[in-house]
Length: 291
Length: 277
Image (tube, rainbow over all chains, first blue to last red; front, side):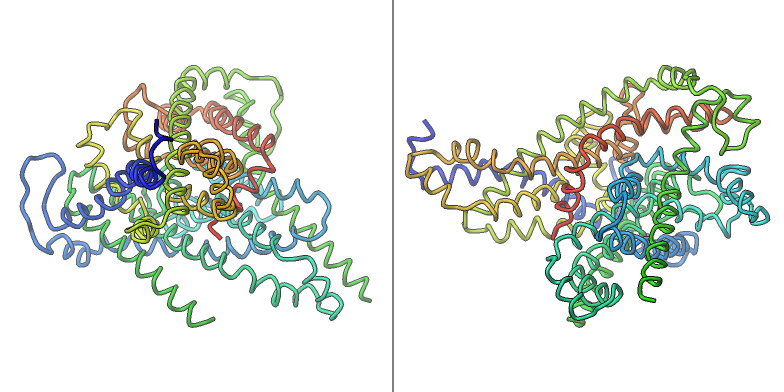
């Protein structure tokens, strides 16, 4: 029946039929929430009452003047710092595993595997890892550094480093596999030519590998920044945000769902969104100027 | 001299690789050891000590039964299956339209999908929650399903990339034979998209299996627990029985490990392709 229609009619029908659901979903779950979020952020809505008042910029004022709300961004810096270590390690392992090496597949598999694990499982694994007399303390004793043992998750000065470490463990494999894919798409003949020219491994890395994977590096950097700002799983599961490990997202979820301050929580989310977008744009501009 | 330097470099490479592998594995191995220990043994031995009895599975039965893990697997499977089928169909259809037809607004539509990637879903969660609530989907398995379908821009990207490599002359020759667009899509394009579909299934599947945030927020009901939330429930009541929690952790890891070993090749490809080149 459908086949009897002219291609022009078919085309029109198929464009509408195939786009309808994705477009409805896109607007309902990507754009409408953003729009509503801006709207709620100017109200004192608690999330369930029928009526609410517009309060202007009061919520924003609270966020920027009450240190309790803004201090959580300091915690993001730990995760942000960790992502550089993470990407450095990923780049190193991806580079050496792109060349001939024994047990290549074993190492690839092992380094990537943590990324596939459930966030809750990882949170628990690291509770075991960091507990007093747990894995880390025991390992330190074995290598004679037992005096470094301490309350990894109890000491507010250390806790975010520990949690960022767990996050590094979790996401390193992701960066690694993406870099590995990008490096393997570089033609073999380029290395051969470089070998003939007498370039050593470092030169090859610096002048062949690095430029070819620049784009992927940028993309991963953007993901890393928004990831650092929106850290949630690991600190929430492991500490619930206690001992100074509260992140912006944990706080937003608490403000919205525990304390029923939806207006304030929305304003926090708006601030978060604006930061993420600014950082992304800034990066684009900076990196473009570099080309 | 060169040879010596080369050998030193090579040794350094292997040492770092072994250290890396050790760092990746040791936290998991300790949990595996602990899951096979008795409560007394767990308290008395060092985390690095292997269990006395390698076949002590009592923690596993306890975790599986008390934690209602079967329910968790069931719900996860249900959500996973519907979301993946839906995401594959919806994603490939919109990608087909966007890549093959130039129509008024097609650029705009493409832009709308692109722009949406800029919005981290975690920031809009509070507002999204209100929408799901208005739709009366909170505490149903359809809340995560509709969210996994709706925010799936990565799948669209992957399909778009693949569609670029499928020649349009194929479509045209089918049209000469009188095939309708529906036939072309389902009989020609979709089968050719098979590698992209495998990629989407893997990337999406891993995300859904591991997601904690969405089910935790949208399905707090007892009967609706998925693997992540089932595991999370062990925190608290089992605070003094870490060997049981360790067994529960292993129960969630084993399916992933099996899938990883079986699908290794596709998984690597999947992630490389998922990374929007």
